[in-house]
Image 1 (cartoon, rainbow, N blue to C red):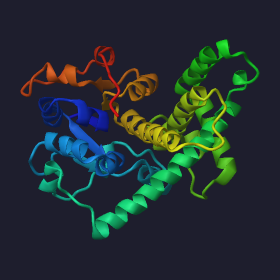
Image 2 (cartoon, rainbow, N blue to C red):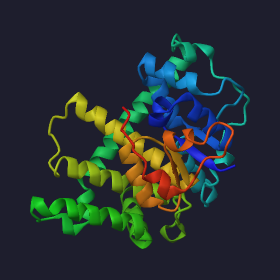
Image 3 (tube, rainbow, N blue to C red):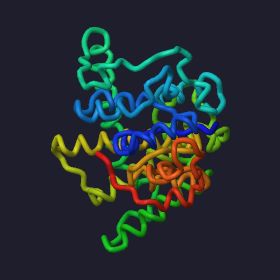
Image 4 (tube, rainbow, N blue to C red):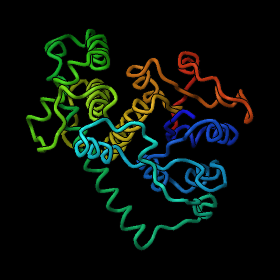
Length: 299
C-alpha cells in the first residue's frame, strides 16, 4: 500500500467513513507534529479527531518528527525514505479517554508535552527569523513596487520548487552559518532527502509569511501573530513529510498549494474524493483530480 501523510485539517474535518477508508487503503502516517496538535487542541476537537480513527490496534503508523529524520540522514548519509521504515514498532491502542474527551495530561506525559511545547515555540521563532531574511535569496524582490510584489513572490516560489541546484545553494548557505560536522554534502542532496525538502519548505513557507507582512514584520508581535506563525511552521512539516511520502491527505489550502508546487506528480486527497469511493473500494488517487477539489481551511 502507498504511504500517505495525515494532517489535522483532514482528520478534524473529514467524515469518519473517509478516515476509515483512508486507513483501509493506505499506510497512513501520523507524525509527531500531528500528535502534538492533537494533544494541545481544544477538548472537542481532540475528541472528534481520535473518535474518527478506527478503534483497533495500530490504526495508523506513528512516525517521528522531521527533526528525527534530519538526524537520521546526518548519521547514515542517505535519504530517509521510505517513511514507514521509521514507524514505531510497538503495538498500541489509543487511550479510550482521548475518544471521550476526558483525557488529562499529568506526570511524565505532562512533562514531555511541556518540553515539546518549548521546542515548538523555539522552532516557530527560528522560522520567523528565516522568513524575515528570505528575500536575500531573491534579489528580484528588492526595490520593486508593491503591485509587482505578488508576481515576483510567485516566481521565487517556482524557483525554489523547481530549481534543484538553487535548493542546494540555499542549503549550502545555511551550512555556512552553523554546520554540524556530519552535515550531508550539498551535492549529495536530492528530493528524496528530508534536508532537501526542509530547505524547500522553509523558503516556500517563509515567502508566504514575508508577503503577508509585505516584508515589514511587527516589532512587538501579538499572541495572534505567534499563533498564526506556529500554525504555518507546523504546516511546513506536513509538506516536508508529504513530499517525501509522495502523498498527503489534507483540507488545508496552504498545505495543498505548497505540496502541489513541490510534488505535482504525487497524490493529494480530500475527503470528498475518498468518501465518494466508499469504504470497500480503492480511492481515486489521480493527483490532478484530487488537487482540483474544494479545500476549506480548517483551524
